[in-house]
Image (cartoon, rainbow, N blue to C red; front, side, top):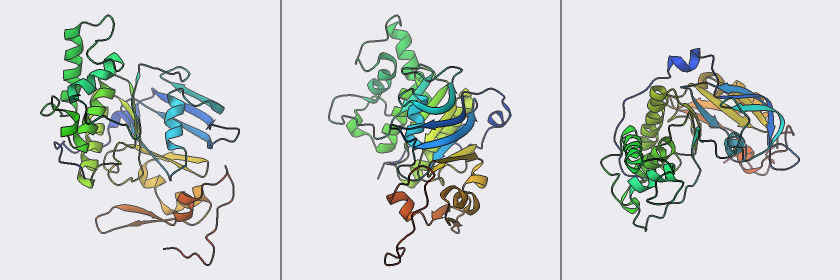
Amino acid sequence: MSGPVTDVPAVSPGPEAAGSSLTVVRAVGLAAGYGPTPVWAGATFDVRPGEFVAVLGPNGAGKSTLLRVILGLVPVRAGMIEVLGDSPRRGNAGIGYVPQSRVLDTDAAIRGVDLVGFGLDGGHWGVPVPGRARRAARELVTAAIESVGASAYARRRLGELSGGERQRLLLAQALVGAPRLLLLDEPLASLDIRNQGLIAQLVASIARARSLAVLLVGHDVNPLLPVVDRVLYLARGRVEIGPPEKVVTSATLSRLYGSEVDVVFDRRGRRFVVGLEDEVTHPHPLNGPAVKRPADHPAP
């Protein structure tokens, strides 16, 4: 379990995201995958400046694939997508990215401030970006660290930091180049419940302050509900996008999965999706029939 991190104020979805006609990402009839059969198809959506979108769905649904399409790492099979007004391409400096399962050498003498600096110098420790003065680079790193509330521990070694503290520094690394689009792949996965909410609020506050578009991949919508503008849900090769109260519902998810799915609430108002045990453990072909649970294997 992670250690505590600094609190941030609660953030409500920003009005700019709902009203802006500009787009950071625009997809029409998009299909993508690694082989001849797409992982998902028919995705039509846009993401606007300052908008915070949660990407949800079961394991194997293609959530990380979507981020890799935007990064130019996975080919488009059908339809079109524009990222920052152009086709996806590798190494787009306008995108900040925190990948899933980022491995950090916590035994090395690398401090948090060094980790953030890698976002400017490409990972060459202690060498600033060509053409950038060393002092200017330090100022950018300091500003990124301050923006995520990590100044108090940024000069400590990574091995001395909690999971929540390291996650903040990875976020600072993605922000140090002043991107227009931020892609976060499972940033809450290793955090306790409290820190999940704090990091979600932090990301939302940064998105609003910088008019930064955010796509965050996650499994649990509950830490994100207070701050996200929309949910992009992937299931069985299909894509649905909209406000969470319209997408994470029994009716919408049952339609996506082609079988009965229940969204239930506990006394604290948290949402839980029930009935997806087979969907998570048995991925389906694109638009294929739902797998029925055998009678001799009742639901747990």
